[in-house]
Length: 198
Image (cartoon, rainbow, N blue to C red; front, side, top):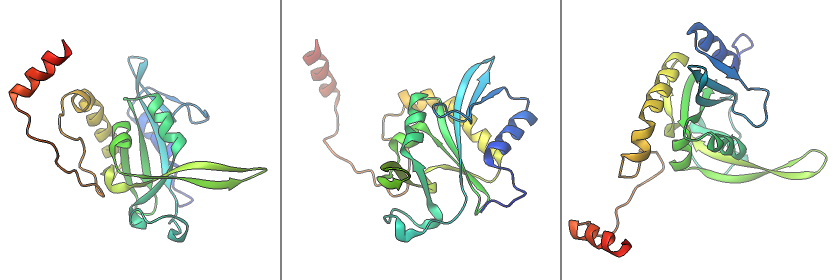
């Protein structure tokens, strides 16, 4: 659990960005925008949502997806908001129990293993809230906020390569085994493909 003297991750991000003289917009009070819009030359450069794991989960209440220490429970709505700002968006999570950070780009969110479920909620009426069970091991782990932002910058710089140049399945995610299938493609196959679409 976050200690009383430890700032929230939102406050930590604001302090870090201010210390670097980085330009940003604070959208943390918005229901539709991600928490931060990072700016470059006064234009949006990256959209970042921040979350915290504040306490251990009671595993009796959740399906077995991964070990509790590796588990993070995320709102389906948060992922959909990231998709609205794709591909320049992602989520930074601070695990307060272990004082470490994990970053998930929107590309990771689209490709990595997860388990989706609906949680029943009841305020004045019964309703459902979409949740994702994800594994910290599928994110980029760092021990400091500075390292986290260095990794975010590297991922931003690699986005076009990841989206357009990598031919094999992208990502090396835990809880996933990528199989092989089909026959080996030969040059003649591409000729047939071209001829059949002309």
